[in-house]
Image (cartoon, rainbow, N blue to C red; front, side, top):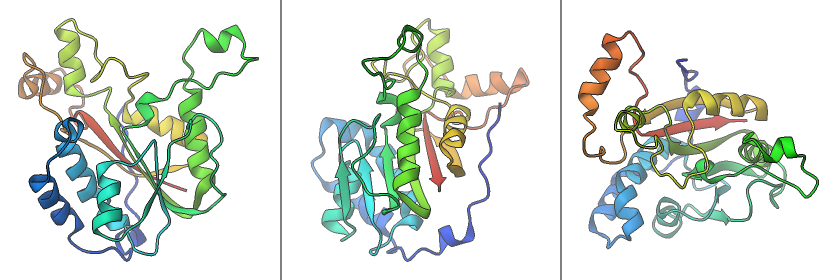
Length: 243
């Protein structure tokens, strides 16, 4: 199933955003002594900043779920755009006021959310993965966003050419096996719809190096020759959701 994002609203391109943040962030990521995690995720962070820059503004209430990323810390420390941190269990109601946020960052978080089990959960709920934690989280995102507010979400792409390559190598298809669940754009679209959020932008890009033995170019060509859609096969998903 091919998911297409709706056309980006005009107002999304007219936000009072500081210019050239993505360029300065690129320079920052090139000169700073980075952690091992940031070295691995450097391309993803730079690409995410470039894509989300039109949504940024000094007068916005911004929160990042799951702890502050290097992207958020840079915005707060170097650009004067304050990003609050929320790192409690995201499967359950947030201690954030209704309709208080202009922008929510949810960067490489979705894939870590297990189901939301309770002491009285039935065996049918416990025995199967129902995505309840992820859906609950997106419902909370909608609750805390102001009308018209945005959520920037990135997560590994379960439908990537790399996932196909791993299967052909008889390996687990996930980018990172300890992840609870990796998703496709179609999966996120269905969950967002259930949460009452609209997708205004959805695409993929290549963030990490290909696994040795996986020829991305050859596999993409084979996908096309077999008559399947080769678009949105990058290893990471970038999605903008709107309330």
